[in-house]
Length: 295
Image (cartoon, rainbow, N blue to C red; front, side, top):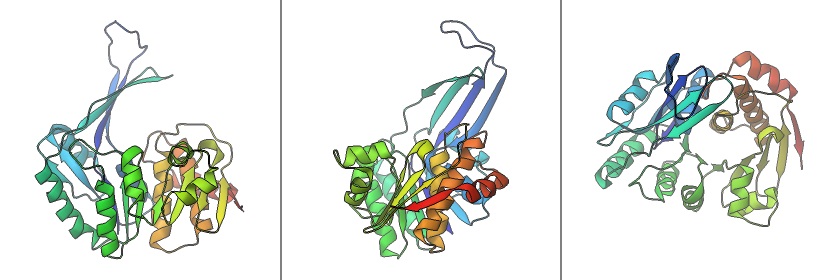
């Protein structure tokens, strides 16, 4: 199975209104809730693809319980005393205004308990995916710790984070890192994307470039893949790409084929109504149109 880790899960809440007018009262037409967090998006896409997957991370309070109730894939969360965060979007159909709550603060004992739980889970995994931000109280080198534990069990890891969590995680040498082009530029200012990817410290780097597709960079080779022109909602597209990378890594596919699959799944996710969803016919159609070029 593939193990996904989301340490800072969220309950995503969307209010639909006719028009958003600051300072006025609004009658809400509908309320939708869904599990949020990058790793949960990855897990749901893997579930749609029919891949065995288990989602883990921290969950606390009513929001954490609701996330677990709504999640459609097997999960094994570590309970914490603090309340998991919610993200609230008020949408008038044309645009949305978001409100992100602060995440919970995790205690030292809760972090140690999660590490023990994770160690048991990762021993049965083929690949582990580490995604998203860190909640308060969790050490900045948390992903580095989890990468090293996976390595001790012979399990390759994929890291998709940002800022200090990404920098410190890269120091542990994950099998694959999946930053975007802007994050790479911050890691290695002044270098081109390919050179910055090679300087990142990961075995292989998949660098997402939005509508321009994605690059895959190894020590001595690099490929570029571009999707057909599409319009839609890009939220969660990168997470769908990570799902493809995890699946390809589990089956030890060639990097160029994994890249083609990642770009196709990312593009299919753009057409889906919400993050963590893809329509398989869209994915299969787009995959045939994705071009891969070795640089």
